[in-house]
Image (tube, rainbow over all chains, first blue to last red; front, side, top):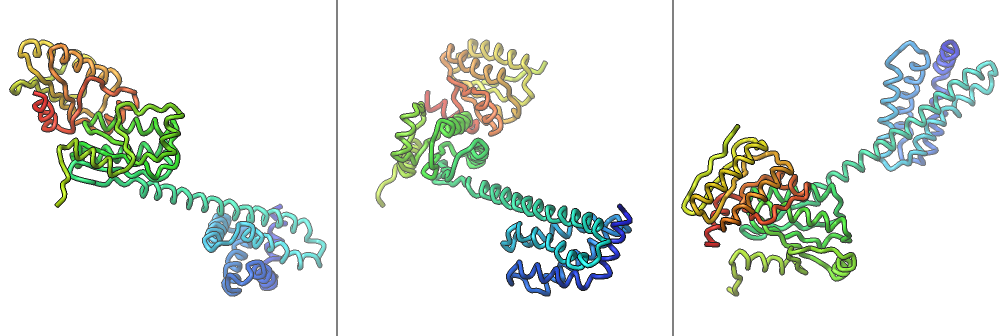
Length: 271
Length: 117
């Protein structure tokens, strides 16, 4: 096995220029001009020499380096909007390029088979790193959205508001609750308005989350009002039989602010 | 066993819990408070739990019971200075401290009691 790999490595080294030449032609054709041919050739030369080093077995770091280069290539292709198939096909076309040369000499067939298996592995590797790169992007976006989506704003001295936009799941409720309570303690506010205008649907779970938040705020000594109840939401709440108990609910944030001001003993008069 | 001191300020009893609450010390506090309420005829109790970082269902229930005991002496209980983490824990445990009022800090709690009287 090692011998055949060595022979293959020697063969690849001898025919480096030809193989890299036709390989980069194949890849460049697949990319349809989105990357310059020189750049493609440069990338592939690096990859090619690593493949040879890995095959010849002389260098134990070659396999790791080869994987790292492939990951990087796959990530940069992903960032530039290439599909994973395009990237993987680019790697697979190395087989085609080599086959053109091997076809003439029948004695290299077993070596070519082993080599082809290795290239298959490399192609699949690009697929894997593509999807892991995508997943990382998605989790990053989700966490930054999470941070963006829970502002706590001060409406008045002692009155704060939490405008909720988007779906309320347990993770987000937890975050909202923590932030609301911390702000209550930090600002010494004793009234909080939770505005759910931007919450698309209110089901029993969301209501449960809201109730939890309100009762936690009450334990700190702050009163909560829920505002921004839209007509459809009101209908859903009633038909689901959700009870908000003695928690004040208002149609708009303005109504809730007026209530909070009244409870704080303040009055708004025309100037 | 740690004892929690009970201070009398005007017509209010002030209890500041500065220790990690063990079940026994909570029981002791409950007894002491009942005796003190009977002796002084205080109209309000403020329990400051700013320093309390950990609560369990037992302590949560005890706080409610202290509220009920005070009610029997016609005194109102205000729990002040609860930490957010404690509030979240109590909510998750399903304890909403019925019959006990809450305030952000001792000053607001005192204002609450005075407003009543």
